[in-house]
Amino acid sequence: MKRWMYTLIAIPFLLLACAQEDAPPENTEDNLSETEEHQDHLTETEQETEPPAVDELMSQYSDLAYAKGTFKADDNLRVEQFSSKEELIEESSQFLSEEFAREVVDLRFEEKGDGVYVKAMDGPVTLDEEQDYNLEKLSESEYRATQQHSSELHGEFELVITFVRKDDRWVIDGINQT
Image (cartoon, rainbow, N blue to C red; front, side, top):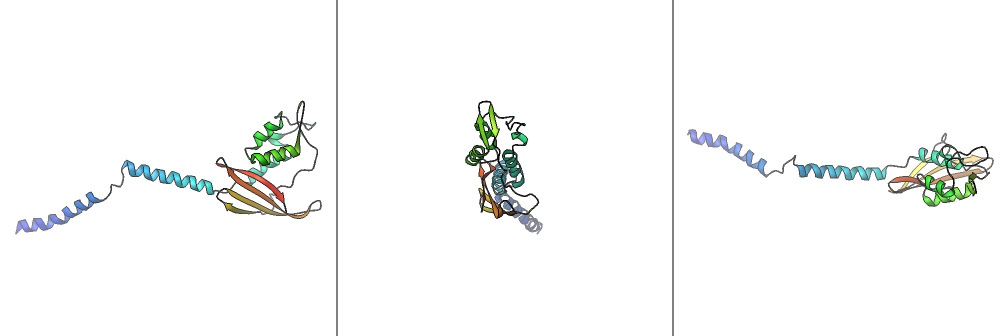
């Protein structure tokens, strides 16, 4: 009778031990590396869906368009830190698409024998930081910001700024008025 009782007591423990052997191990190196890879993948995907830093990109664009900050000009309108338009395009390609950088630099700067000069003209219309704007996701790699403007010089219009993702960073691809 004692044997029978010991057997009945031992059976649940044996079943429990067998069930644990069949279950996949929880903390093996393979499982940890798969989990880490999955988390890395999620992080990359999440980064792609992060919207552009609109204010920062527009601040850099304003520095270029108004020849201030890195693009500062002296009293004779000569750009101090750059000696060619190509250098300006290369530097501004950090925050503008290359095509848009070339367009802005060709419009606002001229190259002379002793350096690059700012062309005398009105500054561009940019985002008004005091006013709200709408940021719309067009795809994983493109956003559009819009803002309503009104001025005596330009009348009423909508400012449209396109942001695209290039080389794992956001850049301004164009600024238009409609």
